[in-house]
Image 1: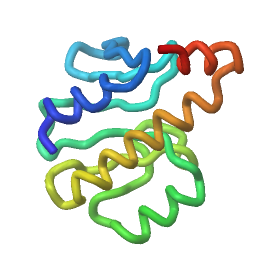
Image 2: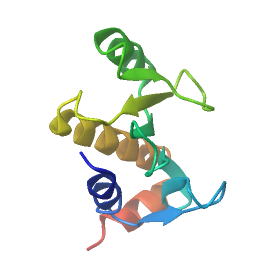
Image 3: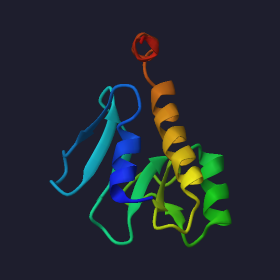
Length: 119
């Protein structure tokens, strides 16, 4: 997955936006003001921080120790840093991004979740 493909996929979700609150080179993808992905899209290797269920986070780190590590500068229990350089199948990367988005949405107040369901 390329940086542009990662950006396009993150922005494909309902109400997803790209913001730059930390630095102009750090893309922060949010849904209704809550972060679900962070990446330096110009970094090599390309990585992305993603929210993850704590049990899944540990399993992924064990299964892909070179490509999935505890979230850099994040709560290590709930965030992983995933290397997106072709080592992981693109399908898995997309699933992890979608899971991150879904976890963040699940934590939103009910009224905001309902707003996302509207066409």
